[in-house]
Amino acid sequence: MGENWAFVAILTVIALTIPILGILAAMVLAPKRPGTIKNSTYECGLETVGDAWVQFKVQYYLYALIFVLFDVETVFLYPWAVAYQSLPLLALFEMIIFLLILGIGLVYAWRKGALEWI
Amino acid sequence: MLHALPLAESLAETTTSLSGWLTGLFSGTAPEPGASSSAAGIIVASVLKATVIVLIVQIGMLYATWGERKIIGRMQDRLGPNRVGLFGLAQPFADMIKMLTKEDITPTAAHKWVYNLGAILVVPPAIIGFAVVALDRNLIAADLSIGALFFFAIGSTAVMPIFMAGWGSRNKYALLGAMRAVAQVVSYEIPQVLSIVGVLLLAGTLSMNGLIHSQGPIGDAFPGVWFILLQPIGFVIFLLATTAEIERTPFDIPEAESEIIAGYHTEYAGIKFGLFYLALYFVTISASAVGAILFLGGWQPPFAFLAGIPGWIWMTAKTLALVFVFMWLRGTLPRLRVDQLMAFAWKVLVPISLVNLMVTGLLAKLVAGRAPLMVFGAFTVANVAMVALLIWLVAGWRRFNAARQITFERPAVQAVGAALRRGAA
Image (cartoon, rainbow over all chains, first blue to last red):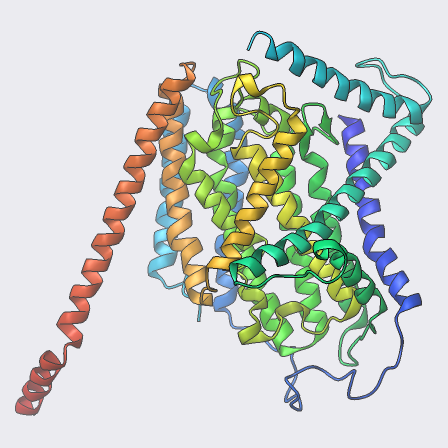
């Protein structure tokens, strides 16, 4: 098992060198002729108005909250699923109750309009 | 089956001895099964394996771009690339040279570190996922006990470089694209991970090789059939959610060119744009490979008498079939609207996958240890029932909506309402 994780670590390092090598190769090969217009922010040829770094509406972050909720739920579901064959039937009903509570949470978020993209 | 299995066994022996030989060659000792190699040997063997994986994936990616352009071209009644080399086969290399020799522009307004790091970091998550992809019974780089979880965990880190790219560019389109991408990727991650819980539950393991072993004619592990037959709804959800995860059409809202230019990679040019392109094809291939492992039996042949054909051929064929499905979807379907897209994840896919999970859990207890045909029959009935219920619900919802529209929006009704209001006033 330790061997496998060593491999994952080494693959990560090699995977990081791929884009770095690409960028280094482009540094050597590609021309460099910067200009004020060329390096300006792209906006369909128009002058940019205002800053792009703006505050984002709070509606957007509700998705993040619901996501965290359901992602934590999956963290509970995975070990349950893997051990399921050896668990008694009670485990199924426990998980169904757990999922129903989550389902109620989803319905609540839905009714509150947290799932509407504006 | 009796004379096919020894052949399969001997082929498996060959792959074992081949990987053993490679490990032995570079660690200086022929490793006994279970014997611990030296640290230096492990590192050298890992570097070798990693290089081989990266090379295979790189070539696969180059020809996936060629294949996609050819296939989409044919679907749109065009020829696709056919000028560079025979059948345009040298086209990917021409593209690569073009990317490398194009000027690499960093906008003055951009945050240079975040902008450049975004382009660099988008590639590793796409490659690391391949560590757990099993090409044949002994051809797996790292058979982690948490293989499936590892793959999805690594895949979900890909939102970070995307957001870095969008924020670092300091461009309105890039920021909008990044915001959409993050919302979409996290939303579709839920149905994606939920859709495979049914598979994990039946297989009872997270290890990729364990998952493959449990669904094939070779070996006598529990269901013994491909999970697509037991979990068709799960497979469809997985396919849709994965298409959204890897941001391919019809779910490519983050880079919808008709709305926001190119989304988060609007400001990237030359090789840095190429890196985003590279990552897109890497994840397309790795997601197809994992789909093939989870639902199509990986290197397992469909029937035991076909065991003579090496596993890696099956695995490659299944992976390519799924890559083709992704391309087919792109050639067929128009892009969704962003609010429809988000609603589809939360209001359609998540509830269906939760119901599917509960039904699978119940059935798994009922059919535990039965013959494959019996298991298959029970799951078919359950899945058909679920689809029928879904169709009934959707039809009912549409009727309800249509009735509401007629009541409130028919001009005559509105005219009467207006007259009543005038009379009351």
